[in-house]
Length: 383
Image 1 (tube, rainbow, N blue to C red):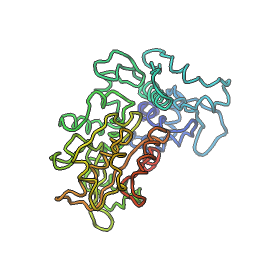
Image 2 (image 1 turned 45 degrees about the horizontal axis):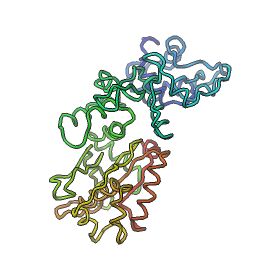
Image 3 (image 1 turned 45 degrees about the vertical axis):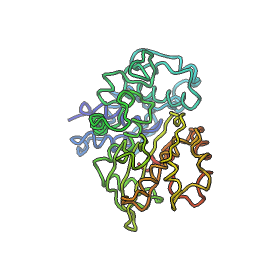
Image 4 (image 1 turned 135 degrees about the horizontal axis):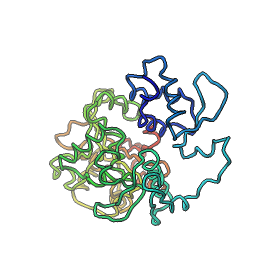
């Protein structure tokens, strides 16, 4: 065995989550590297082999020639967006503006790919980030989208063959969970968006929660990290879930992006409905129904008196219906649940979503514990 046995794809995957500079052992001891090299990690020369691989075969790093250190050489991580800012030995270059980078297409593999002139500032930032990840980490050409029949190329879209290989997912097991859900043909899963659109919240949801479907122990460990849920044991996790028959609940197509059935520390049963948002706005259609009014009027209603007309407003309608589905499942005559919570996962920088949440909270009683705002950085930090 030697440095030639170090797997470049595992190194690149690990570099994608490291900072702009790192020591050799920061890389070699990372969980991704240890899991990806079971036959090397127990060898006495493992760390040295990783260092040699970086020196001889890896174009994604640069030796920074710092003084010797017990953790090995200091490297500049060229896959990190801020790498140019920490390279003390290289001439400084001004950071490219968003407009300049967006206009750049480059070659088929390493170019960021076309961006969208219609994006707001937040969406433009997210699209550019996904374009960078596709170009510099996945190293595949961009595809067309956002629909299957679209002919326009965008940097955040994967080509058909790359989407089919599961490159929109962080782990092959997550890809298999997604394929199994597509074979079921149920729920609101959109195959093209799930497999090819890196900017969509649907693959984001699978990447965040897909591994939990078949691993209750892992799910329990994750959700115990959030004291507000009071989790003792997770009993089940499902993606793209809606209770059936629909007519006994909201009588529409409302569904959770993810659903968690669990037992609380006091022994009671609880449900957690999860809605994920990345850049897509909430639904711009306004839905009303007598079925909705039914669930707003229960003894444990989380809404203030006369909230109905404001809750159904287009600004809050989708969020309100997700919340209604939680309450309907909790208060159904045959329900096994004593508690129910809607968790909204959203990006910390999504100001439009923040405004929607702030407005919606005004419609809830001050003591409400059935709605939880979960910024993405908090969730990823717990992971």
